[in-house]
Image 1: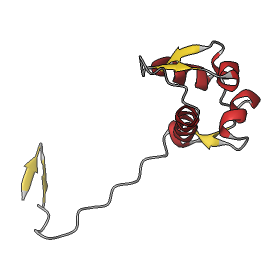
Image 2: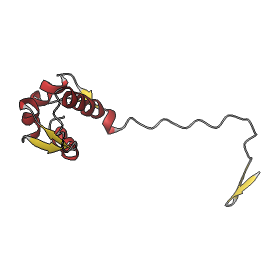
Image 3: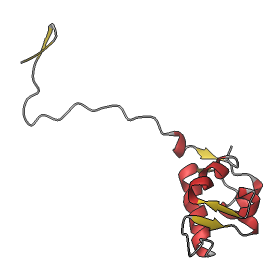
Image 4: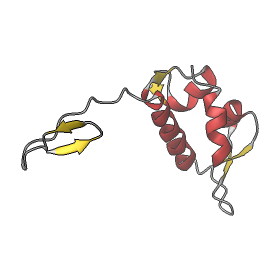
Length: 104
């Protein structure tokens, strides 16, 4: 037996299964969001979780060799990404801010 404050509880038996905890609700990152028409040109028109959108954008960037070779943190946007980002060059840290504006 263990004592916690004023209450006494029986200690769990050795080898006994631990009590199951309730699963946490899905995070906001896992909720499917509808991309704007500009972003849909890159990731497709179907609703996707934010994590999947970022993954598809990175796939597009690497496939089209849009990372600055001298500074890999910079993305040199082509016409499709420039429509999403609003400028021709962004850093990987700015990218998520611009993507959030195109997800509902």
